[in-house]
Each structure stands twice: as structure tokens, then as C-alpha cells.
Amino acid sequence: MILPWIIAGLTAVWFGVLAHKAGRVAALWAVGGALYSLCLSTMVLGLAEAAFIPMSTAEEVHHRIKWSAVAIVVCVLVGLVATAGLYREAAARRRKAQAPTPPLGP
Image (cartoon, rainbow, N blue to C red; front, side, top):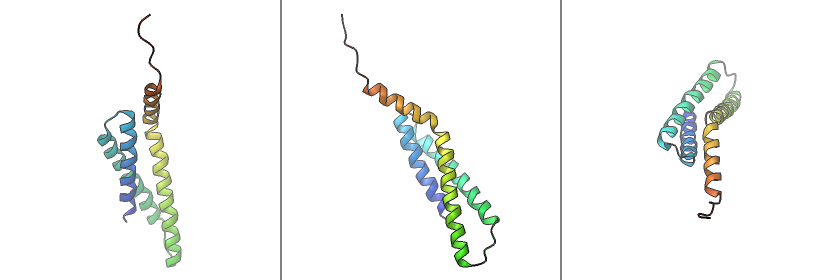
């Protein structure tokens, strides 16, 4: 199944961009995000596949769509928790960049 690889690629981009905005090493965060989402989505989809015995083709398609959505939601929720600190750092950098500098001298 190719879906875990797609989720991993999108998560790598998400983590990398966010780390870059926060002033962190983007490549390291991108690789970490890709590995985390690849493992997590593979586990969710693997468990769903193991627990399902298809009765018809239509039922199998419905099952795959449903569990693909569940895997994406789980990866997004865990990713939000994992990157909460990066969101705070990026916001702090934005506020610092937008703050006016005080005048020099008396």
C-alpha cells in the first residue's frame, strides 16, 4: 500500500517547514516526521487490515477509505502534539521580528 509513504512525505514537508520557521534544523525534523508518520500510519492500517475479513469488494473499498482517513487523522493529531513547541517558537520569532526597536540614545 502506498498511502503510508504519501503520508510520510507530506508529514516530512510539514515538519521541515515548521522547523525552518522556528529556526531549527529543518532536515532533521523532516526526517523525524517522516519516520514517525510512516511507522504510525503503517501500524494503524496494518491493524485495520488484520481485523477485517471482506465479504464483498464494495465493503473492502469502504473499509480501506475509512481506515485511510483514520490513519491520516491519527498522524495529524500526534504530529500536532509533537510540534507544539515548534509552533510556539515560530510565533515567538514572528512577534520578535515584528516588534519595533526602541530608539537609541537619550
